[in-house]
Length: 265
Length: 97
Image 1 (cartoon, each protein chain N blue to C red):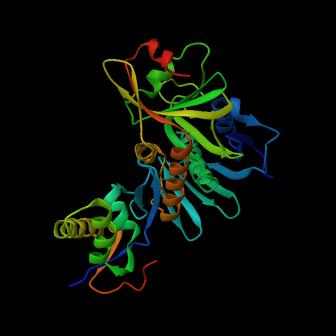
Image 2 (cartoon, helix red, strand yellow):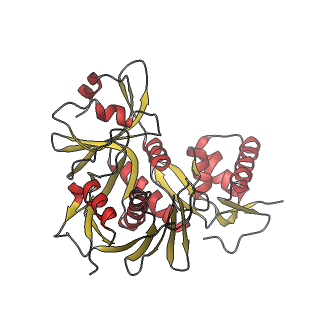
């Protein structure tokens, strides 16, 4: 096993093999709650190299492509290749943008989750009374706002990127370190998924049931979906249909006041 | 001239609450079909003429007037074909699944 830090998110351990001290410090700080020395499974391995120019690509788009048996990833100044068959890959990034590794981890987890019937979802999520509630929506829909209004008995899993997968036939939401406007990592716990809410800001608080078709539409619009790959698309569609079939979904129209949480849980 | 219809191979489809939701796997575009369109979609085997499908699955179940029902079905099929999720031909479609 290569030396480095093991970051386990949603029960998926990834060993980040890093020599660069500054990047190691960044990783240990950013993913503190998700570091482990006793992973729940054999870790996937990503060897990270810091170079002056990184992987060279400098655009803002996340580019992901499946080609000749491997995933090619380009994010900001970084470039990575991931070999699904071996569960290993490499990443080159610059010292100037240590955050690149966060974007790469999001892509990697979306790739690793798809064949397991899971997904990363643009959504805040939280646990209340032992049950998980997921709040999805596009940027500006109110994910971070709602998370920021949560009362003390609510444990936040994330205000930006939710991790959902089935465990023993039950969909669970897991905490992630992928933060949005709140800028804080979610709690590293999980709970059975009780309900999915499609967020919209409005003049009053109200909840309307969504049909399963509407739920699939909402999920497909908000699942992190980096690659235009037919097999991956089909896997994520199946996941969206399965979640919609067993988790009740609602439209949550809310005003940004703490009272909205009286309707949750 | 008869029209034959078959589901594209580049789709994923699931029935939810009696209606179909279909995704084109080439561009991830989603389509939801109503009850009538779902009947036509389910019968799109590449071998049964659309006229027969309309007669058996639409007129018989929804008490639709045959000519209007066929015109609507043909329009629907052409639009779905434009999106690449249905294949249409004036002959039976051998490669239909």
